[in-house]
Length: 127
Figure 1 (tube, rainbow, N blue to C red):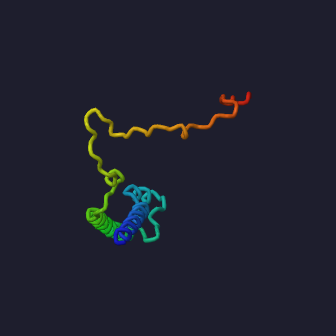
Figure 2 (cartoon, rainbow, N blue to C red):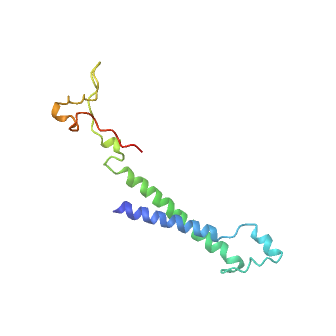
Figure 3 (tube, rainbow, N blue to C red):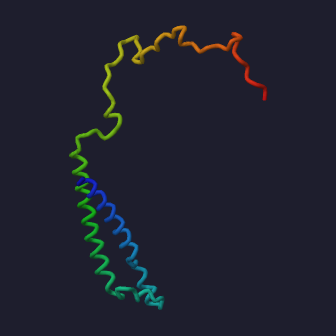
């Protein structure tokens, strides 16, 4: 249960970090604003985005790393096998000259398929 909550919050933090990074302006945006591109008039003002978005991204990145460490610790505490191969039963090695695969049982006459009444196999109809 704890691992599920940590995984969901980890994914949420990753999406939030991606959104915040995409919202931030690059360093080249200031040069465009100087020539009248109008990029400086954002929601938080020309100066306010740097401190607010950078600080929020840093906090979310710290939480992301903490959830990463927590998930690594929780996955190390699991006792059940993680793969199908680990769940397979262990068999003894085959003796020399003998196959590890058992031979099929011999077929009796009652196991043979029934032939048609004429005694010969039916031919498929012509196409």
